[in-house]
Image (cartoon, rainbow, N blue to C red; front, top):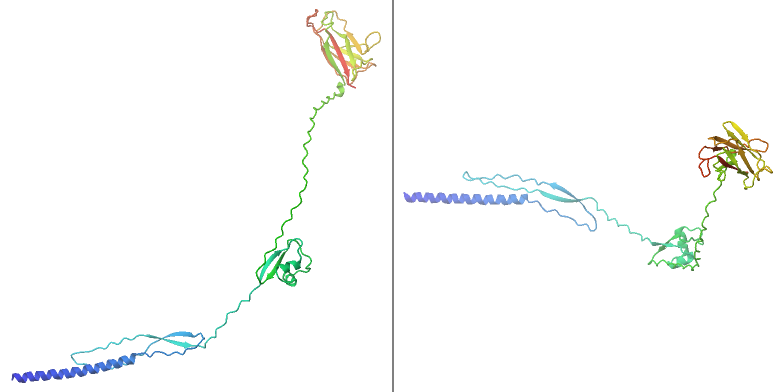
Length: 328
């Protein structure tokens, strides 16, 4: 009985082994087929020489093949996971665009500026820069090539190295004999201005001077005018024939004519009031002409008599010297 059980057990194991072996083999074949079906073939490209290609990138998706049902046993379920990887297809579209050649820069001839110096001609300037006169005339639009102005700027087109601009050395001017400055002439010392005499007003063309006579004053005999009184002209010469009026409190006396022959020296006169003692009087006096008419231009002199000490050597004012000056 034991041997029978062992035989059945061994047979079952062998049957299961065979079944599992067949199942695994079939499953492996299906998985390999699925992998080959999901693989995307590589794109092919045609090379175009010297032509720019516009590339358009388009996302594509590969359709998954239908899953083949897998038969599994009740004891084991095998799930096959398949990863889908998106791929990017690069497609060349459009017509090749021909390459446009870059423009070639035309070389521009170099130019220099030349400042016309004194004595230069257009031919000499063109020769210095190795160009023709016509080129300089056309470049600068010169209407008259012979009319150049010192300091004028000319544009010179040159193709080779630019020659140095000729430099004109300034000519030293001959020394000039600068005259030595003369010493300043001393200015004469200005003389003090001569005082201009103050013009006497018309009413004062005859002026008076009062001096108390030292020879006869004081005099206790009474007031009076000494015969030392005189009238002179502008040159100091005595004036004869004039008279003097004296007014003391509306008491008026008129002297004898000046220089009256046998009575006075030339130009002199005197006056006596007929008093016997000193008087404290204030009197006025003025000059009259020979006809007894007052001189309109005469000054009116004021004489102050007093009663002070009339003894010799006293301080009294009794006898006055009244001099007049005629200013014409």
